[in-house]
Length: 633
Image 1 (cartoon, one colour):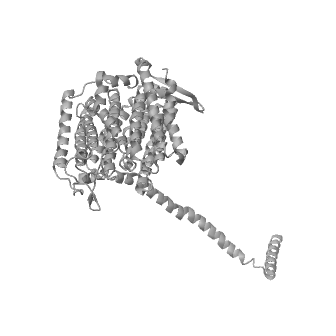
Image 2 (tube, one colour; image 1 turned 135 degrees about the vertical axis):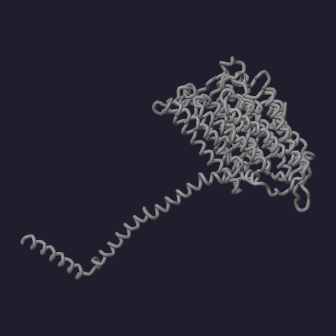
Image 3 (tube, one colour; image 1 turned 180 degrees about the vertical axis):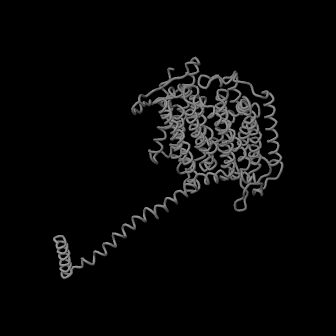
């Protein structure tokens, strides 16, 4: 590929932007946000050039390596600093830079009155640079640098308004829980060095077929642990809801284009390792199925519009994880849904930000209602994203999520029935909680808060916020169908992930699965319409069932984490402190006390009186004489 030399600039542009914005000082306050927008825009243009060049190559020649030389030499281990340009990495480059640029533009208006807007854009640029490094790296160690960069940027952005203690704690919670997952990637790399003496994709993925069953399973499970932390999958998903503490554009960037998609990328990129261990593949599918239902159930009970969308992200990433665990039949559809989700979820989050902008930063959907009449653009764009995530044809989600439901029913024995039914049930629950969100916000009677006796007066967002929402809404409508024409997207990814077609037939006919899915979706939406558009919505959450109370508390995941991880650590710490005080410290204190008492005893003989010293000398002389006399006798 002639344009391969441009690859480093994909990362360099946002990285330079971050450096200027974070180190340049307040002199750049007036124009820094536009520099922040320019950086990902430049990366998008370069990515488009690389994409066009790659599309012009034969399918078997669409992989290129841009190497900068040897990075690390440690005995037999040689790690190259190199970027990999192939259909999978370019798919992520285009998603990250295009959606990321729209979020940057939106942020210019959203953060207009924030005194730290320049710093905010510096962090956004850092986030984009880290994610691009992650997906472009040609080995796991360089990928890990981007992986940690994404974690750092998310910590800085989630806790951006750290003058509030709960926001600062939310950033710390995300950072700590991600470090748990990071240990999985570190251990996986240790196993790679042990088995292959390398961490490069070519050596590890090319030799994965020769791994022993135990090593392949261990490596696959460690990669899954890493993905669970970064993509907020069970049991490491509890940080995602609290991550809504950051400004709304951060939520859009994390959920649509960067952080939570990294785990899916890691597993699909590491497909040969998973295929070497059926047990690891099964674990991935189980985690995906559990998380998609977990997130959907939690989303049904959230009144905070951003936390409801966060639960939705958790659930939708669960669909992608489930597909990634199904092998070649699912890899392409996992990435396909990731791309379409990137558009409609970014649009939904930006729409939520527009609602907050209109409602004095309120996030309580119980105090919205009837906003479609005063926020028509926001209502239409969020409505299109809502229809896309429901999977209503011909919107994007129909072409991607429904294919995952279909391939979940492929297989033998009990697996297609269990995992397929989980995916099908998740679609119905998704329709309910996303329709609940839409109707509580835009339909029904007004439940707007009042200030000093005057009703709120919501208004449409400025143009810099509206246009990114409109563009993302267009993608929510058309992108899935366009990429499906002639199997374009699956054919594009085939050189990396294999052929998705002809991998088996579902246990139920495809047309029947489409009908069943649509029936469940319509029923879920109608139930939400009856409850939240036609029926009255109380301003205060009413008394509820045990399940609803559990869902409002994230199914007690925080309590479980505290019981399983935090409390044992606290008990161990207290036990060690007690043992230290009663054993180690006590022993030294007793020794010191003995030395002090012996000193006190000796002090009586060192009183400074000559007669005492003379008597002591005489006594000693008499003792010596007695001993000599006894020996001589």
